[in-house]
Image (cartoon, rainbow, N blue to C red; front, side):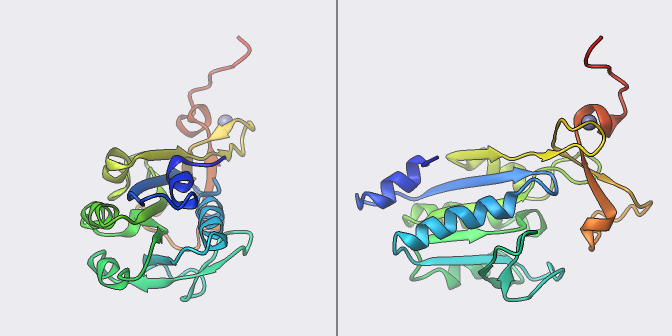
Length: 198
Ligand SMILES: [Zn+2]
């Protein structure tokens, strides 16, 4: 799948910036898709920078690490405004775990895209309560392209877009995600007891 923005850059035409959002539940392959797009940009000899919020300390501080360990090195930043300062000589900016950034992130992405950069943002669209998460909904609104990726519901095997929390904690952010969450479809997340064959 070649995106229009990728097409534009790869053809060497005058670059027009753009914003792409990759979102979904946990275990939906958001980071893998981000890395796939960034690697293609690297193959095209474009200058790529990757940022993530400093608080995401589950894994290596220097790498965007997806669940299959298919990684690209990245820079942790404490505030979205730092991304502007650190993107001076960059053509493609990747941002992972966008839901944990401050509310300034959409304005930062607009500024980067208006400078002519391709901005690719990955993050959770909903928190464990099924509510829109952090700056991601605003990013979805201003993006040229939004891709929703899906996990597989552990209960019934349907495409899943909810992150069901297994622990009783009510903190919005809970580290150690693999043990604490499972992907579920709408029926199984809300326990609607709808029999698809009836
Ligand atoms: Zn299900």
